[in-house]
Image (spheres, rainbow, N blue to C red):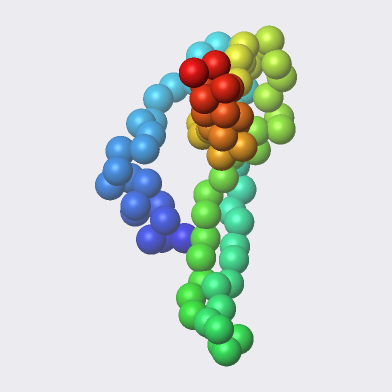
Length: 86
């Protein structure tokens, strides 16, 4: 957990600010995972700090949501339409 917090701070992931009036902070939680080698022995322990996004209300906390990546099937469909229309 200390390594994860240090990495977030060194990358300037966030800045500490005061919370505006009549607003509530979004919570977060730690997610732990054990990575194993092919033989089943423990390779390393991982910890990630994740936000509890399910506490947000559409229209109140956010207006739009966006997909950060295009799915490969979408790209293939677009290319096939372009090829079909020459």
